[in-house]
Length: 371
Image (cartoon, rainbow, N blue to C red; front, side, top):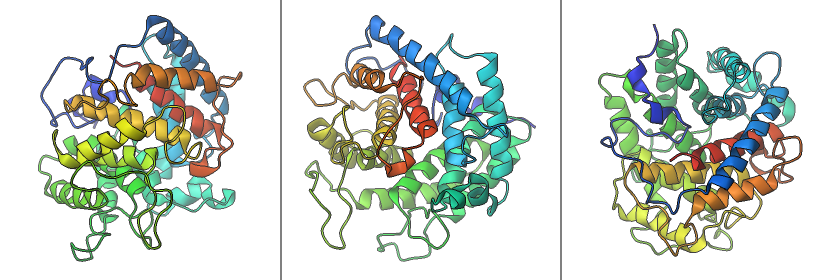
């Protein structure tokens, strides 16, 4: 049985920066919240860059339908194909995305399958089965193939099981999601899981498990934030303290707060946005330079779009993130390689893999072009 189409309304399908259809009432496109609209010349140049990037991804897809036999990477690459702006999608890209979704269903079918199927042990990468399960599900959610409803309910059950609820609520780990069964929870995994749960909430008529998960996750994410807009980027983490805040962490905090139920006007949301207003950058991952740049730009675009849909002004005029769409597009246009992909020398976040950096760049550009 197919998933009911109203699980994912049209605007929700755009990218993995979606919010739940019940999260807010219908509203016109929030064109005034994040700076001016993108100039037509920049939009047209960006569409050409996206076309070339999609062709690069198609050339890099393996015969089995995956990219690098890695679920998270495959999910992001397939999503970039599926979210191409109107006029850029082709039958070839649609078929490639469907092959990827079918590979993902097989790779993620069993809890033990994902790390081996991902090829992570062979490549020297530590296995992160929870993150693979969460991000690898996005293309499946997007396509709604066959019996995906039951498959995705199983994904939800496994993601709930990864949440750290077996410690006292006062424990800093409480409410976060573990990247692997014997690992402590972390913000990155938690951000990916919350997004996947939000996207699939429509599969459950009654969601007591989700309500508990969101409330606990909000405690985990918010525990690292002050109650007011007072924090700054430290040069280094104190011994035994939290890691330095950079743009990627701040963006993951921001979208996780919203997915977990924080409302417009929440001082913790204002705190992160205040940091972006002072420290934000599109030319680098603020606080970390080139490290994790493509993961940062994609996550930041997700977070800012999530703010818009909640009626939160994410980049007021005069702040460092004003007119973020145009500036992000111009920066990614500048960085595109002649073969249509995006490459990176920094090994953080596995960004030496051009399939990954290209997928993240395309997803960020697709978000920036949305009205």
